[in-house]
Length: 181
Image (cartoon, rainbow, N blue to C red; front, side, top):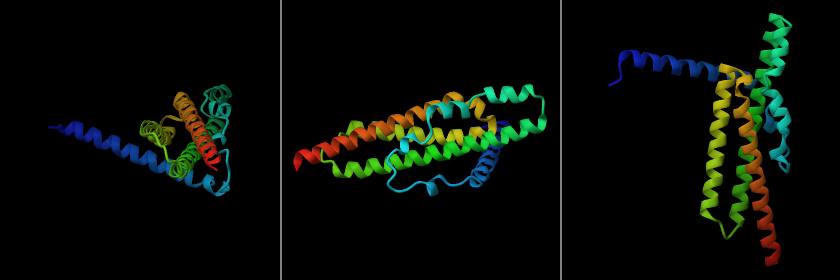
């Protein structure tokens, strides 16, 4: 049985996570929607934000510079803006992942020879990325983007990898269609 103190601690942690989620969600609602800016026929969805930008968004170097200036107002403004940019990147990455999977499902419907093991690996990577985006979304509000550098770079690399697999899959489907014609 769970003790009273364990249940209380669990409830407090759950409440804090809900509050962080609400705060991050309200911040992201003020950002322009990524889906509104994309045209339906955009092909390079997996390369929306170069890895160098992702590394800079989640880097601690800018914060270290701001801290050396010893300005509380500048620090507060910087943290608010950097959190907003990081949340926007997570929103953008999540939209890219959904778009990649939607395109993959469309391409899979056209293919006659689907390999179950490969599809399972792609789905697991997709699920992992969606989970990573959710975790990043929550943790940006709790810890700030500077402490999430490695997770963000990992999510970006995984997004690029899934985009590359989709491009290879689609080119294979097109090649088979051309051979059949």
